[in-house]
Image (cartoon, rainbow, N blue to C red; front, side, top):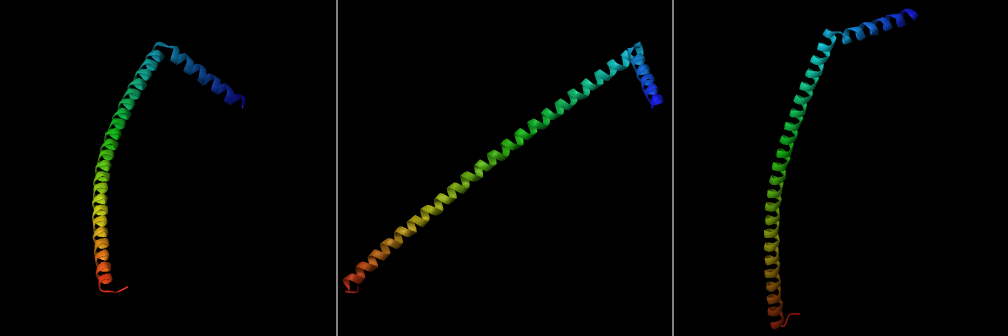
Length: 106
C-alpha cells in the first residue's frame, strides 16, 4: 500500500515536472490548440445539422399544410354534394307525398 502511494506520488511529480518544462508547455499548447480546433469543428457540424433539420422540418410542414388544404377542399366538396343530394331527396319525397295526397292515399 505504501509502495503504491509512493509510486503515485513519484508519477505525479514526474508529470508535474514535465508539464512545467519547456517541452511540457509546448505539448500543453498543442493539446489546447487541437482541443479548440476539434471543438470548433464539432460546433460547426452541429450547426450544419441543426440547419438541415430546420430546413427538412420546414419542408415537411409546408407539405403537410398543402395536403391538409387538399383534404379540406375534398371534404367540403363531398359535404356539398351530400347536401345537394339530400335536398333533391327531400324535394322528391315532398312531390311524392303531394301526389299521393292528391290521389287520396294517406
